[in-house]
Amino acid sequence: MPLEGSAQVVGELASRGYNAEREAVTLIETADDPGETLRVVVDSVPADTLKITAANVREVRESLEGGATSSSRRTGAGTGTTAGATDAASTPDERSDAPEEPSELDTQQPDEDPLVSTGDSSTDSTVGDAAPVETGGSFERKIDEALRSVEIAGDVTGQSTGTGEYKNFVSVFRDRYEKLSSKLRGRVNHRPTSTIESMTGGSEVALVGMVNDVRSTASGHWLVELEDTKGTFPCLVMKDRPLAGLVDELLCDEVIAIEGTLSDDAGIVFVDSLHFPDVPRTYEPSYADRHVQAALISDVHVGSQEFMADEWDQFCTWLHGPQAEHVEYLCIAGDMVEGVGVYPNQDEELDVVDIYEQYEAFNEKLKQVPGDLDIVMIPGNHDAVRLAEPQPGFDDRLRDIMSAHDPQITGNPSTVTLEGVDILMYHGVSLDEVIAELPADKASYDEPHKAMYHLLKKRHVAPQYGGHTRLAPEEKDYLVIENVPDIFHTGHVHKLGFGKYHNVLAINSGCWQSQTDFQKSVNIDPDAGFAPIVDLDTLDVTVRKFS
Image (cartoon, helix red, strand yellow):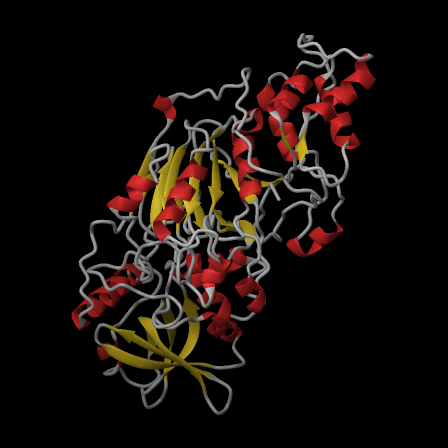
């Protein structure tokens, strides 16, 4: 494809890890063969080059064109350079063996249970000082505002009524039980605990309850205590039963259903089957009626010394180019800034120490995004909102600061519907708890999407109370996944992963912050500088790499 317009030149250079002087872009664009000129320029500059200069391009043009450097150009000339050449897929642990030539990541089609597919591209150079984004004269994103639609549901902003009293906690847990038990009662012949207590030994029973306790017996069996609105009842899972493998997936405070048989003395239920609220296996997602894309990112962390400003500049330059012509939405799943006092000695790793100045700096970064994108943002645990979930959206002062392109700011979690496609946006603090509590083969930081599968299975974004995840007691539980989303988007763990669970696309989008000293101390190796791009008409994923 010929390089027609400076935007395409900028995009091609950015995809290879380079920034460029404005004059250098013009010299490439007006060359007799822009594609060949760009290729030779990139091949000829030293390995540690950060920015392509006009002098670099003039030298190449003199060798290719016999000294001609006029501004005239031959329309349609050149072999062109197309990005996105297919590379072999690899997991994050395999990236160290990647070829040295920088390139964008390939399109990856997530299957039912994939590895994290991030391609094998890498680069030895980084972008230098931030330069103005070149939008070019030949490329213009075609926008039909009549086709766009953004709707938001499940936002706690302005709805928070909890005072922290005991009755508030009773209310939120009762609401959780009612919502999730309704999804299970059609699958089992539920009887309340008060009724089961009066039944005779040997009776077949079914119970829907909240997990109150899980412990092993001296014989290695599992005792699961379930609670409903009438009381509690002990349920025994024998260690030699196939369903015993499900017990290590249980978290306290989640709602499940069991079927089984009462013991002879009617004091315990021997469990024969166990059910989660889950996503129906027959679930069919919704799709947009046209080819349109959304960029899903999170954990920008502006204000940190490790914020990847150069990579962010590359991402924004790419958004201005023709390869991003179908990207019309940008969804940011929390942690816009690094925050203050979030972890020990954080002040030693801050580039901007004032929280409001951090948001002002983030707003400047947001200005680099094309103004014709619809932007939706939720807060995270580093942001200046309450830590307890659900988190309301930012207050008016912060909204006024983050005014670039008039983003839609909503609470954490919220369901954002883009042209009929439901995206459940949740920052993801509870993923730490899921990964800590479940066996490594079922949930890990290396494959964060698999931890997300368990939240979908439990139909709750933060099922366990009292651990890492703080819960704000409200009149209702905003953290229940009442309606199945088409896309589940999280961040927080700074790892990239995506896959499909019962046709729901789960994406954890990595971050824009390189490894901090604190992360080194807790063995967190972040996947930084990635931007998953989702085709809303197919739910296919392309991961773009800018680091």
